[in-house]
Image (cartoon, rainbow, N blue to C red; front, side):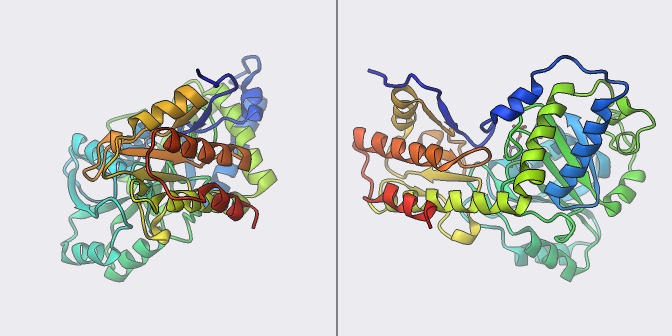
Length: 394
Ligand SMILES: *Cc1c(COP(=O)(O)O)cnc(C)c1O
């Protein structure tokens, strides 16, 4: 018997839960795309995007998903034959490297494994040995497959110490609007993000952000794609040039509402603090379950853990029945396992704790997982839910 007759809960690390306010903001008649409200709304969105990313640089909005802006970012500052250094701590790091390779960019890849942050000393060593070939360093802030979060400020510092000129390009698709990120203070030259994770909007628009250094490189980079070129979009002579055509009208209304909630009402630092608290509650539960040895959080060092998503792995148990039990019996959809570092999808589940979420949802999800573990006789330590509740109430 399935007891699942309410609204299903999606604890997936993107697309994330869409607030009703965002949905309602999108529920309106088609606007004028040549003048009026939409143009002012877009200016407000660009200002708030800068505030979320903590930059005075230029955001560009594309009708795209994350894969698209991976390509957009590379296209604007690199050309075929250029070389980049890719730092990999999970599947998404490899994904960006693949896109670069397919664009004819030469990729030197350093694989740091999938359970801890990259080693910046190793990066510095490679840059010191480089004779000016490497044009950019590509890094993932949070790799959503492994749930490793990387220290971007430390990476910048290490690059600066080598006096290497490479651009620093960072994938914040999973982390923007969840985890502390300081584009300007950390010296990030190019950043990419998308709307369907921390920004709580249905998939469909994605972003590049670039600073003056990247803008200068871009001016001297020949472009083969007029669509991805960010120059006409950055200072458009006409509004439609900002989007290289028809704007994503209703996504803009939804995004405007989401940014109002995050920036104008809650404040981005409070958003980060809320995500940190939620993550600590999840870790308390996962670490308690791990006591019995069957499942454990993939990242043991707390400083290397993402506060937007937690990947749980098992060396011994098939977790596919747990996914099924949670979904079919209880109405809880967990994040699927994206295979990484020797783990197959059936050895993994992921808890997305990003975006629009409260303790009811979080504790409901954790309790449901625990009920599933019990029902399927998967060994797990005691006290997980109490531990999570303790974190949330302190
Ligand atoms: C989700 C994600 C992507 C891919 O985004 P899509 O919108 O699915 O193309 C890339 N990088 C990271 C870190 C992600 O979390």
